Amino acid sequence: MSSIGTGYDLSASQFSPDGRVFQIDYASKAVEKSGTVIALRGKDGVVLAVEKIVTSKLYEDDAATRVFTVDKNIGIAIAGLHADGRYIVDIARQEAQNYRSQWNANLDFEKGDRTIPLKILVERVSAYIHAYTLYSAVRPFGVTVIIASWNQEDGPQLYKIEPSGTYFGYLACASGKAKQQAKTEMEKLKLGDMTTEEIVKNAGKIIYQVHDELKDKDFRLELSIVGKETNGLYQMNPEKWLNMASEAGQAAKMDDDSDNDI
Image (cartoon, rainbow, N blue to C red; front, side):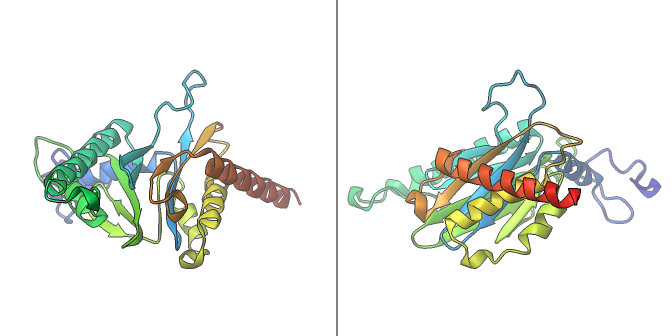
């Protein structure tokens, strides 16, 4: 940080002379040290893909997962501090359950249950994250949250919430170490016309292409999907789609390596 910020980074409630909140900048730095997380929204669904860095070979395969279920048609992927991310996932689950308890009591059984609209969930979670940037007794969450859902009425939806509490809707987004490289690859895609199979394959390709083998040798691909192909249910690491993404990613990586050898 520049010298102009000296002494102004001790509290999340204090602005520096140039109008910055350094605690939020530090939270964003924590996200940048995380494995890459991407999300692609096609015409029929949304795919979340994670480059989970393996820091110990002694861990179980599902240890420190970065994809989570919030409700039957809503899922989350996190980049940044894992403990912070799990806490935000719990907040999202509480909001989804509160909405279900409040509204389903007024519905007839034949109409089925009603899950929280994604826009409302994102607004509530982002407000909670933003509150932690306002007081000196707390610190901002060092995590970026990517939330996806699909339903028959609204189709695929995708949002990303930053450590500041800011959120936007996306066709595709990325966070983590190789965010800029992933964004460059995603900008080449015509996402609005792509089927679920196509976005799954492209998600696998991007994760394998942006992985830096020199810095982080071992990683596991985590993938979750929600859309018409899953009948509106959010699925984590489904074998069919995970294998498809891994094969596409490994093939793309081999092609890149062969091109570099020429």
